[in-house]
Length: 219
Length: 110
Picture 1: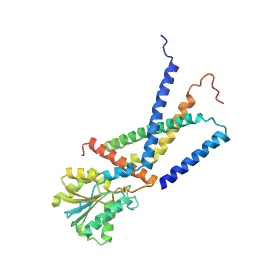
Picture 2 (picture 1 turned 30 degrees about the vertical axis):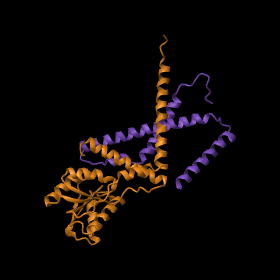
Picture 3 (picture 1 turned 180 degrees about the vertical axis):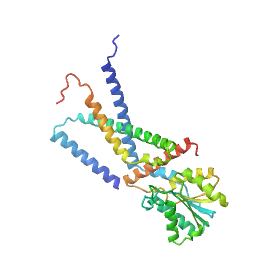
């Protein structure tokens, strides 16, 4: 029986690799078209969002969303901060707590938001800040240390709709009773292809984050 | 509406390119199937590089968190530039493979 030559084996391996890559490429193109040109991301976003439960609580906790080194809040951070301030103005809780660390030597996000709240007329005495936590889990643990010493258990948790389920789970594990207060829901009415791709990216990123939290035992 | 416009735009320029290729440049009509197959292969290689890049990024970030006091967010592994850089890696690797392949004896490189 003829033994295959080294060249024949290399060719076979090369063809196998090419076949796998073609298949992957086809799957990639198909996923791209499904994400950009069908309502699948819109349907997934509806399933992903957490509905609001706006009821009185002891504190409003606004999770971090990012600040630039020169102290400019990211869009996400600003939306969350303004939502927290509005909830406080509605009288839903007496304490307003901002989270968010500094980045690259700049001011802490929590402090920038606290200043924004003061500038918008919130009394300095009701504002608390937590500027050391860098992840959602750390935020939950640091908030436990900050708030449970003050007897606060029931909180309105302000973050984006897609992030709320994971945030709620880690805060509940930290001993809080959570009322969801999404600052912004994932828009299920996006129809432009680029918007749908962005929506899909956020959904996939959050799914991977939930997977990581599950593997790490945080959920 | 916008998605229909984009699909119609790309569809019409693709038909135009096919006509220019087939009539103007005299390219073989059957060659387009092989070209699509090669394009899918390049995209697949890109996805392999993307998966490797993201995996290595996550492992490196987690290792850096454990071994140093510095903090890098895991969201850094989701940077859009990784997709473009993976495309560059994928195309270069694919062309390297193709140009290194032994040519059939009766095949002219010209």
